Amino acid sequence: MPQYIPEPDYQHGNARKIGVLLVNLGTPDAPDAPSLRRYLKQFLSDPRVVEIPRVIWWLILNLIILNTRPAKSAAKYATVWRTDGGGSPLRYWTEQQAHGLAERLGNDGGEPVAVAWGMRYGNPSIESAVLSLRAQGCDRILLMPMYPQYAASTTASSFDALAATFRRLRNVPGLRTVRNYHDHPAFIAALAARVRGFWAEHGQPDKLVMSFHGVPRYTRDKGDPYHCECHKTGRLLAEALGLNKDQYLVSFQSLFGRAEWIKPYTEPTLRELAKAGVKNVQVMCPGFPADCLETIEEIGMEVRDAFLEDGGEQYNFIPCLNDDPVWLDALAQMTREQLAGWRNPHWNADALTARQQEQVVQQAAAKAFGAAQ
Image 1 (tube, rainbow, N blue to C red):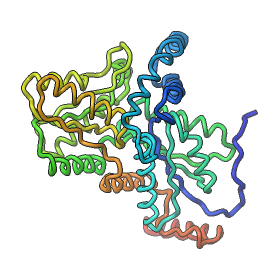
Image 2: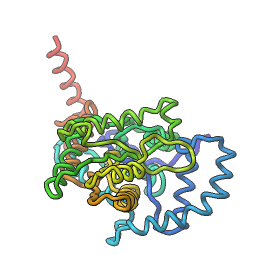
Image 3: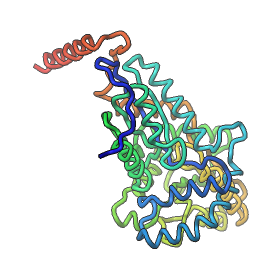
Image 4: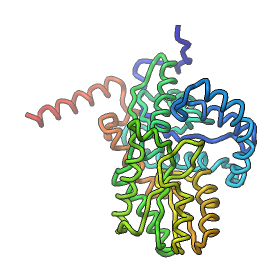
């Protein structure tokens, strides 16, 4: 027998509500070795993330990685941990994005929408976010991954976690999932606005580097579209900014392990640019809607030091979209598009009885049928 999660009390005629679930990759609970060990164990135990035989990987993970990497990773997290109590940057910005989205959807005047956020690894979990939406009476949920480009190791893994939660629900809500938005005009426009705003303050560089999170080369060979979608984002953004092919490039960061990853790698690329005489670069991360360890510490610090060490003179990291109003407007636009057909903008669930709601639906259907004749 399935071990179901207890459901909120159900009564016929309850007002309907839609839930939107923002999902990001994850974060440790604190910048210390025990927290990093828990986080890395969950993250690196996911077969979507590491695709090698389980027995071999279990030995490598538990005997080597989890005994050496947590302390090193904790030291890096300590350099970016927020001092205002907000925790990790990824946690802080994801929460701010959820608040911004809720505010915009709440001003639409349509059927009520609740917004929650969860992490694929760490806390708050996807399951806890789903239960929060269910407790608020949501009978439909839209999963909006904070990964613009689809990858099995991010987007599909988040779908897996949501499915695992649904298997434990008796009264399963309706579900929609967003696969990607790497080429959505609103997303590209938000990125372009971010860059133009930075240029207005710091000037335009000799080269704009768009650094995306890396994935192993074998994932592309097996059919993962991530590499292609990253390049499409880069091309569309360059077009929006009026850049030619010599003014920008796409690279990939955050390598892990000994396997070959998709290229070119970000840090070696920046070193090569410096040695070739490029003095002024700006680096941005269009695959990260929110700043995190990989953007602030790796790109903002490590890669900067490498570029300057090999002869570069001016290096600037363009912050991610975070809570930029243009981005939050774009996120709201994409969400509304995904909710089409679910959300009636003229529906006031608080003011209508169940019978009246049914009549509204019947009248709308009759009007649509008549218009089609």
